[in-house]
Length: 92
Image: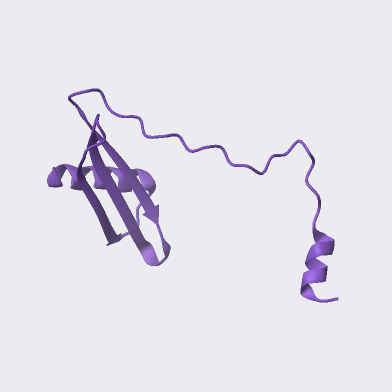
């Protein structure tokens, strides 16, 4: 028996009640008129690499600034998001 045949024999069918579709991602919700919204994202990678991204938009969706940075560090998502907010505010 080759690897593919062995793989096929080990597969278990899913019950009909389980759906494999993913839920739709929520769309972007604009801020109140006259205000700005800051969205941040942090990704922790291998070798202590941390990627941070931020975007500031108004209620029309106009982009004021976008930043994307990579750092070598060792911190969790919450600290990464606070760091990203501080970096975005410096740029703004």
